[in-house]
Length: 260
Image (tube, rainbow, N blue to C red; front, side, top):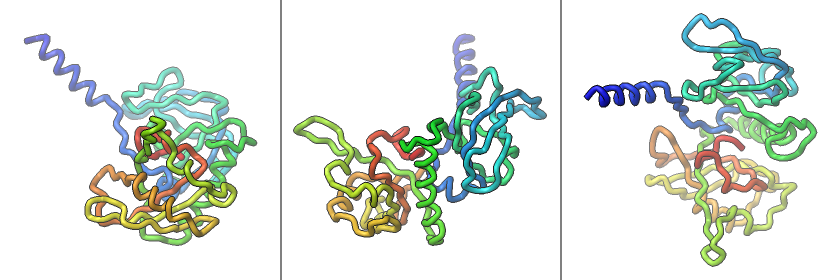
């Protein structure tokens, strides 16, 4: 009996300490954020906490400011020596380049955790690959254009309904079958209109350099992109979806799209 009690206590403790983050849309986080920047970590040091939460400081150099003001310091959940994942703590090291988003104009308010909008990006600032400074600059310019439209919709999380080639027995990116002009259609923003069952009825182009899209691609998107809402069934609603046509869409994080 005593062993059972100890086991139950252990399980209860584990549940309390487990880090649980509510999944959110990367695109909507950018739209809503008051401060967005790319920073390089110069040094880290511990600070004394006035509450039960552990925090440390990262001295940073602001490389690019998309929203808000440059910063020389951010606060991180955890300690320099150790970040406990069960408490949503996170470790950053000198030399790392980070993309950070905050709902405050002051990065010193609160602390970044594993649930925050903070992502490691390519430290090569001249790189043009995904997750690079150039990539995000182009990405955010599209989001800024969409935000200026003042549409009454939010960007949604979405799951990729993978297309299976039964003959070749392979899983593929569903855009690979179509020849797209990459220089024109790298990014696209679309409005998905869902029926009462959460199935996509129509897809309209909200933003794309080349306004027209092959109807076959639209039909494939209807079948392959499944809108995901953490709180409710996404029925009888409209959602914005941001798509990078050059990216392998089968490689989504945790089954839904958090990071472009």
